[in-house]
Image (cartoon, rainbow, N blue to C red; front, side, top):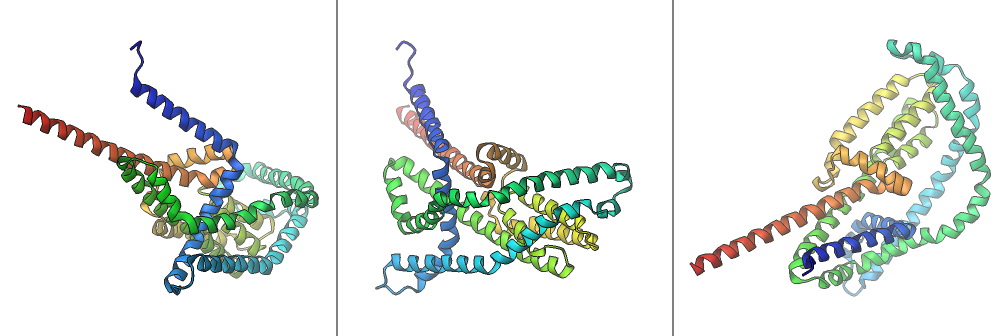
Length: 361
């Protein structure tokens, strides 16, 4: 009546609700980001919780075993940070102090380049030096503002405390939250979303743990190789590469660029061996280790990865880049499951109508 279609109205209403949900998520991005990091931390800790659960006596409550795991994990993180944090800070401070002298050195002019790039040597060296000078100019006022930044960070320190607390609650109450969500749905949609939740759980668990293993592998391999090869600031470069491994695609490239720039301007004599090692390690990680650790559900086309990284950078900076690939993979699972589910429902409906038509005949 009057051109009003109920089905269209429902679709428009659903689209508006989804748009409103995304708007609320964007407005509460800081809170959502804390929850996301808590979810990731939960997936990192859960294997230990599951191991303790297997050997836990029945009279000991489950919450006690989860609390024990979190106390041990937080203590280990604190001990590792106290042991290696000083060395990392010393190397970073020394590198920033040496930047002016490194930029004035003549080492880059003696660095071998391919024959076709020799006419551009001066421009390349000037460009690299200008980039480093820009970074060093920003680093000095940044270092001076650390004292004031500590007071500002103290107000956000609650987030660092909330992440393990939220992770603890997620692990403890996760099954009840899942059941409560599914009970809100109809019987027909409960089957669909039970499959989606199961797939998302498997996806995130494999993705987060794979990132952790890749980061640790990069940290250990780079640290050992850089130390054996005598690379300047070996520990600092290895830690930087390990942390950047959490940023898909752009992180490893940034780590390689930082390592080569520091090695070149420090006058490192065995640059060829360093390049060979990095190339061999990236081949091993990208074509052997990464496919072994990542599940098929995490595989995303390079085009979508690059678009997602650019969009993530615009929406959330480094956090958006970090979350781009898992969000795309999650959408891929939801859309794929929904397509299969509704296709099967449509086929069943057509078969039922054909059966009824046959009986009527």
